[in-house]
Length: 465
Ligand SMILES: *[C@@H]1O[C@H](CO)[C@@H](O)[C@H](O)[C@H]1NC(C)=O
Ligand SMILES: *[C@@H]1O[C@H](CO)[C@@H](O)[C@H](O)[C@H]1NC(C)=O
Ligand SMILES: *[C@@H]1O[C@H](CO)[C@@H](O)[C@H](O)[C@H]1NC(C)=O
Ligand SMILES: *[C@@H]1O[C@H](CO)[C@@H](O)[C@H](O)[C@H]1NC(C)=O
Ligand SMILES: *[C@@H]1O[C@H](CO)[C@@H](O)[C@H](O)[C@H]1NC(C)=O
Image 1 (tube, protein in one colour):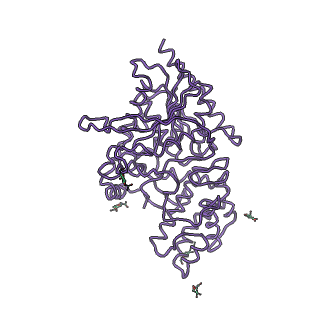
Image 2 (cartoon, rainbow, N blue to C red; image 1 turned 180 degrees about the vertical axis):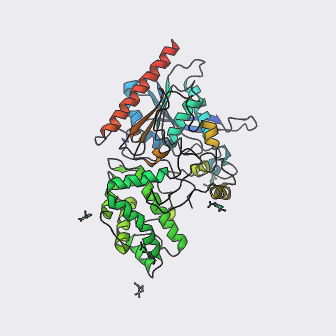
């Protein structure tokens, strides 16, 4: 069964911790789309004006995604790197129901209170905040550029589409806006995971493919639980079929994550990892392995993934994909309402066991968990899906090594809705701070972002004349 969610959010700790900002709060209505509920609450936003030209310099606005805004502020180094050149003010807005932007305090994620967690409400929060940042003027003074990565990238694009009068242009990095029913094959994501592993070594994928049966077979033999727990340093034993499945789900999620953060430099994602982590783990599967030798190899991969810094005592495989220090638990609800992203594996063009996409069972799980049914077509109806020809001034950038590129815009839609490909890039590498190990492709992409931002800003100024 598919886990309800795959967390889109990725952060790196290769940060310059000296990024400075003020923390601010802004009051928003609980419900932007009706007048019945009059409650208000505060969302958090971070500001840096160090380089800002207050006479009309641009506002670079990060449309926060599923997590605490401080993390996105720290990890979107590209905005910090170019702020001085553009004399820009930096604003990072926190998405409602994440971080500290909770409408109902610690009860916010309970089923009775979670209902106002939608992307449309979040975009309306951002619009109100921008209106305030423009001093509520009829004619806005400052050009605004939206930035975002992953779900945040989807939001930056949607923000430009829905509020073009407020945002001059948007940089949408690794934004899987096509990862919705019927738009791309459900196996797209895992095909890319597989091809990233394939590049790292041709025996790697074959070994991983055989490892599933090997593990299932092995787990039925005597003492296998003890062996696995000791050899793989698991926190808990693997005693029955349910636990074998949990372990397999954990491994699948490990491969997904490794492919997403397959960056050219060492990083401290929710977990610390070496440079090119896929190549590093595939070293252990560099020849065709079988049986226990194969399982030993997989066990070594697990250690790199879970314990690269040597600080973790054991592998907590029962945690599923909820590792890390970010509370993105609201995302499960979003995935169960508006963000229905079909995922499947076939075992043919990917290295996983076949698991079909089944919307009926997915819906049922959502109902059991949240007492809501997902709207399968909502993203298409609300945001245009793959029919966004009417949009303008958006750049969609995708690294082809990023599994989410499977749902990204890889071909330019028009002169002003452009696709940029970073063929050797992982998940929104272009938004990260410049790094000496950056490939040329990402440098070129960042320069192209800057050219577009310049163009959008001058369009804004020309229109104001
Ligand atoms: C939730 O917040 C209330 C009020 O701030 C507090 O009294 C209570 O202990 C909190 N509950 C939990 C489970 O954190
Ligand atoms: C698993 O067990 C089956 C039946 O005992 C056997 O045919 C198969 O080769 C085994 N597969 C692996 C990968 O060990
Ligand atoms: C399983 O463990 C028991 C007790 O530790 C030991 O006596 C037995 O030989 C082991 N069996 C296998 C197949 O390793
Ligand atoms: C596989 O890697 C190990 C070190 O991790 C090395 O000792 C071994 O020679 C390599 N085997 C092949 C076939 O490259
Ligand atoms: C999908 O799941 C439902 C409910 O769990 C089940 O009845 C149905 O047979 C499944 N469909 C397929 C094609 O597997």
